Length: 321
Image (cartoon, rainbow, N blue to C red; front, side, top):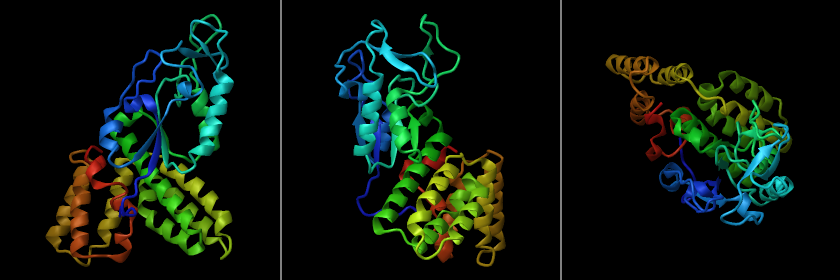
């Protein structure tokens, strides 16, 4: 269940323009109300604008990506002699060193400095290439933190992608707290146990794979195995859960109640799970009933499961999936 330390808010770096800061090339912004209002209550946002940070000024000549989509150059749209590729890449690596306590990053889509994917890359003659690229700053930053949850603002409008991203942010923050206490074999095993049903929802096969990895761990191997385990965990959580995998988890959880609840309650649980699988009701409906029944009939193992509430309830992330 979601139970962060009192007053703790995970830190998320974010493109400054998405927070309403007027840092774009034309002196404007691209405020995301989702980020600046709905999510700001739950996260400490750290606004970053690499183009301003490297001294390009406001307003400024816009830049674009040119050349090989795998290794593009960031040059001026008007003056191609303006090349800020190295400055942006160096700043990305520098910020990766400074922002070593963040749990996620939200980037501005389509940006030649911050875009994560499908950023337009142009040929020398000005024609756009078929394949897009990644922003120079984003590429350099993400290379330093391959496991860090990252997402673009536009994709967060999709309810499934939004929920998936924030599940990963809280998992990353959870692991950071575990590391701060000092990694132990017991701590890793308990962490893995709490994520059992969340993993089953996102990537069922990986729960067993990761369990075997931890099972091979000796008493003094936690610091060696921990990073490999966590890297695979984050990769597994990146796969979005589906109605099918959620349904499977709901059925597993309902099994813990079979000796405790009445026939009528069992039928109601099964009916709501079926309605969810068929797309009639959102995930929050069968989950709410299950959580109510577990409050009446507590189970120590189930009570520790992250899946039941992997993020703050008032974010209402499961009302739309």
